[in-house]
Image (cartoon, rainbow, N blue to C red; front, top):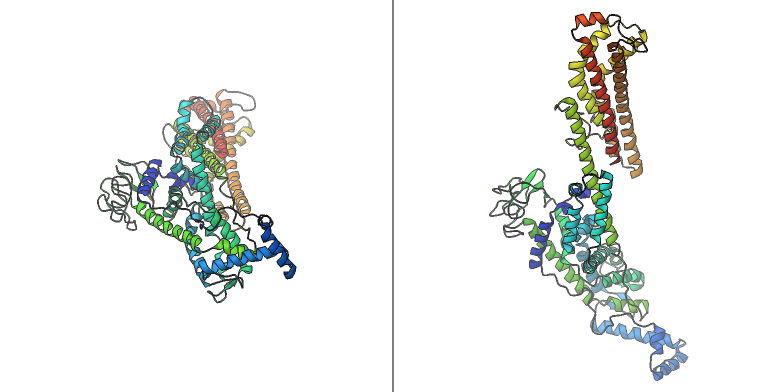
Length: 629
């Protein structure tokens, strides 16, 4: 899972809290509503025209009734016209330059203010695109670590595979995974109502920001003649109604935790923050092979050396600059005792966000959009409505942690299986480790070809080089050349089986070349991965390549298995001097004279091949489990 490799996911909880606390002391974010309501306006939707008319004193209703006789309109229509005229005059007096209610035209100042709102709203677009639009679960996880640090810590620690294995040493791995998910569900019950409310408000503000940033401003602005001229409100009133609903829903300004979560992803995208690792004397950080370590958070003085924060990643001890393209950071610009340059960049982004939020607030204060839409729609009961959004934060958050825990257990079980394979290799080869396939994917070759049968082929290649060639072949070769088999079929079978084992190394190396960059399967795999067709088609192409290569590998393994089994049966017949299907040699006595200890060595070879077959069976089981995970 790529998101699990990202900085925002891996940044240690303690460092997130330090950065958050420091930003709280530096931030000047205002908690004032972004949608201020004038003292002359109601703060809730007005009654319908009919109800407002019915609520009038009787003499007003009588007045409108008399007028309706002469104007050929209903009393309610005349009442509405009077209210619209009153609103239009108020807009002209209190908010000049925005709207001409008599002609129904939006004016130049409206255009300019909307263009400015577009720029301020689009400031958030990149952050939203980099974070929420790519992986909402990853984003909510980071946000949750700031709003609910104890919940985040519990989810990290209490579902850790090694921790659960230590507490449950005998249960199977599959049950251990289910146990972790049950622990996760129990941790979620610890989330308080206060925390739920905070997360929901953040999720809602996030959704409204996203809607505001992605609003189609240009469609409205292009409706104005000559760029800054006028525009009929009839053309854009529906879009302006949507915009007003968004602005009305974004009453509460985004919290500092939400903005930090957004901007941390921007810094990550710009490669300004490294990926954490535990090394050195303090909290370690790894970024492209460079380490930042130090007792005071990230490096002795953030980015750069321990005193001035000059360009370069600190090495944890002296803080000497390493990469030439590093980002400078003053020693007092971050958090921790000596600081961290990234918090200075966060502060800049927060300052820009505060400016954008002030401008959004001023837009709502200066532009009477609700009043204009009342006039434009000729509906005095019009009032913006709340848009829905953010209600699914808990589901997304929970699904993320389920995926995260499942992925962590998958990696844990794969590592366990690889350790078991390694132990099998060590036992069989007496401590020596086979080199394996050069082009197959593995721990040391993550970009290699993902060959499903690579463990078995690696084992057979090691068997061929370390066992067959130096130990078994010198004993079997004379039998091929001089063995007096009473049964001719035995000779044919033995020769064929010997030849299959003798060319085992070549067969495996040929397949290794085929899955390499210039090989048949390697090229097909590379082309399939770069395919621009739909995802299902692309996956199918990749699957076909892997299946074809896997089938070639399975044929090699099956030939080796059949050859070893055949030779074991023939050796058993020779050593036991049997007269059945697999009988002895007519010249066995000559072999005993020519090769002292021949029967004993032949028996040992048979046992060695039996052990090889058992090991292949064990590897096949582990390969199946690795594929499942």
